[in-house]
Image 1 (spheres, rainbow, N blue to C red):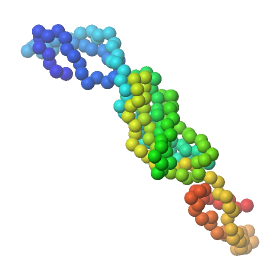
Image 2 (image 1 turned 90 degrees about the vertical axis):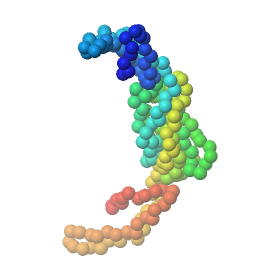
Image 3 (image 1 turned 30 degrees about the vertical axis):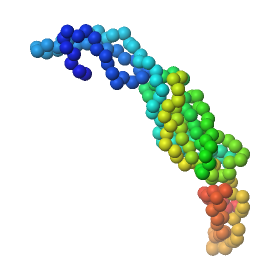
Length: 192
């Protein structure tokens, strides 16, 4: 900290974080060195302010059919800047101009799930997550693209055939189900 003239008996401390409790001590110095620090002052909390740090790692995806799952890294307590902290989740279908807005009031939240039967599987959405507290709305994250949940495959594999290869083994083959934008990736097959 800055050294203050010996005839001055007060100082303004700047660049403190909002809504944080601080204690202060004063140390007297001379050409011979520094003395013992004073006893700490009574704790004092700085005033609240609008939060300025947006959540990071905004992503998501997965979930069930007709769901959009949005996730983020929660903002730490020392960056919440006041009481009444929560998250603002905004999303829109890719190419749309209108944002849908949801409020998540839980400080610990790191996930929001939007359910709507009109969402088609694997639809891309632009999403961003912001913050607020009792002082107002703060910063929004940058936009991320998140895909809605997939649907289960709607067709069975075709061309199933079996070939005996030994007394104890049969080779089963089939035609793969092509990738479908509406149902998504086939992650595996089950042979019965």
